[in-house]
Image (cartoon, rainbow, N blue to C red):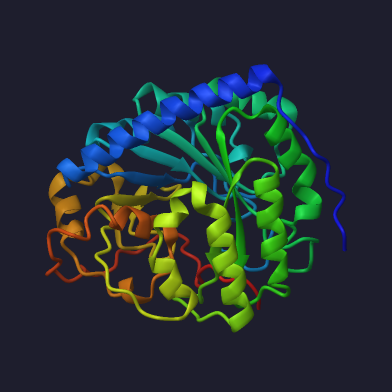
Length: 353
């Protein structure tokens, strides 16, 4: 089904503000990399969940529910204060759907108040021109939307057809950087959709990345020949983004194990809505310790822990952070026993049935 596409352009005032924020953010990113290379004692990237509830019910996702209340803003601020005290460089807000949180802009402002880079992952359905303006004012620096298909189906409503008007609003009004992530792999009905989505993202002036669907343990599955061709083309389209450094994804696409040192639990943290620290969204329960009790010694132990899931991992953001430390400090420790997680779902993220 063809999607009607409009050519949109931001005003000169928006373009000027966008360029200024981009330059400032890029300078801080370069400073972040320098700091990370000089010291391995602080988290580089943290994903934090302020809202587990979601306005969608995608058939592949276990990262949401439809009943949870938002984490109170004062508790969110306390958690961000802890992260800032650890020396965290980047905080990415995820969910559920974070835009359901009634005080999301205040969360972003608090991240920026501490000098940390502020990002967000959203399904995009709650974006409006007014909401984009409020995110601009709050100081958001990165936003990512994952689009699963060209037209909605029984698995996912996150389609180009339903979101294209919002993408156009972002192209016209957002002064933060926008990345559109498409997907390939098991459960994706039409792999050509990923290519259509990626080209539309670049046409609107956004960066484009591609995710490879993993199994329900967060582990890789090889792509088919045509899927690999699409993957390579999208990776080339995404040359303006950090995806160009993700050499590991070429192994993932071919179902090959990769040799790296996962620093989750130390350089990368996943903070759930209960305020517990986990390796990542795919290994909730490791180590499963409250953020307020998570000591530098605990972070150091996880830094030196060999992760059993590492060789066949597909979690891109953790891999990107791992690049900073692959050259140093071998991992000789084994994981501690898994801590119980309140209301932990039985299955992990998987697209398709």
